Length: 340
Ligand SMILES: Nc1ncnc2c1ncn2[C@@H]1O[C@H](COP(=O)(O)OP(=O)(O)O)[C@@H](O)[C@H]1O
Ligand code: SF4
Ligand SMILES: [Mg+2]
Image (cartoon, rainbow, N blue to C red; front, side, top):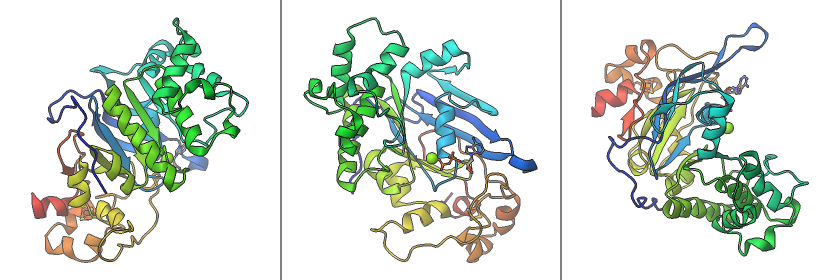
């Protein structure tokens, strides 16, 4: 496995201004049939700086998509703020339209992101038409397809999605995002439905776009191996919270949170035995008191937290929310007691 190279011009100091930030972000969905509210995003601080690729990882249901949709302005938070380029996001139709030009969503295909009855040309031109692009539409579409690696672009103009391979379709989806010349991409599981061989090509494309266009990206994935290959920084999410964050190499080679350690232990190349998490699968309508991971935590169950004198804190006190900056941080009483 290799780590991604530093982006040209990408800031590396924690103090660099973020392009997109979550500040104490919360999204709670009303409970069905009288059930408690589902706290899908439950107090998240996260910064994405210019030219930076941040991977948001965590098992299915932990709130990654809800956080991504909230950052895109598709879901209004029930608490906290989204801040873009130094200004809080406003939710008027006009503000959101301007915002969506600058921050684009890349969905995975085939998840319905391409209309089977639209040609490649129309699929890519759609964003330009929505935003009333005044320039040369044909040139813009050709440029976006070429940047997404579909060359010569004209050869693809009149093709339909079913005539393309999975990798080509994903490139069309990416071209549709690039055509508006955004500053940041939010890619939700961008390669989850692709064959392993194509996956590498699409990841290489995202890295190239960062290098060539200075694009920032939030890449949502349940796959830590993918995060390793693409991201500068990783944020590990559990039950609506970021529980560990930091430079990808640091978090993935020296994970501190027991949850991050468990996720890493099940990767095929991981040394030692996989850590099997016991207990109920996480449910955002029933977030445990104390540390939200304590009912499944192998460190607490195995007695190490007791020996470190933090077991009562694990059961009784919610570890602090991480500040979202670039430094390595962990929301765990035991990790903090043991390693500062
Ligand atoms: N519109 C919704 N209404 C109610 N609950 C939702 C809604 N969307 C997501 N959830 C719940 O929020 C939690 C997080 O979901 P999601 O953000 O899709 O997680 P992930 O992308 O990590 O799999 C899940 O428990 C899911 O059932
Ligand atoms: S705070 Fe305690 S229960 Fe939570 S992850 Fe750390 S050791 Fe486990
Ligand atoms: Mg999801």
